[in-house]
Image (cartoon, rainbow, N blue to C red):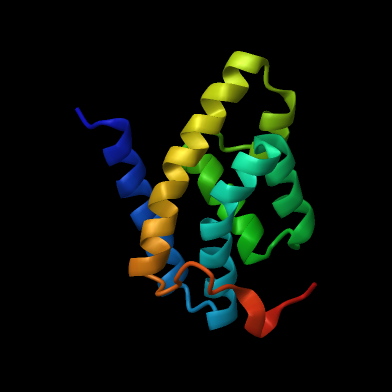
Length: 130
């Protein structure tokens, strides 16, 4: 039997390697990795529902940031819309979901650094669409 952290690490590694192997552009990898670095801070300052909705609204539906949300949701066990799940969750479920997302994002940050080569503070400046 594996711990939750081990399951998260295995799942995230597989998903981040898929980003690298998919032949995505450097800009897409930087957006994915950059958001993996920023999202925990955004969650802590704005809350889970607001942070996920911000990322969802910011990126296009097939973009790398929305892909991160989809991957993150699958990692923590929500294959549907993670942002909608956070918006509609009761307090206890919301708190548990927030902790699960933050725990999973720790692995996304680590693998964004080691697999994708995206460091903290290095984001999509090359291809910014703001």
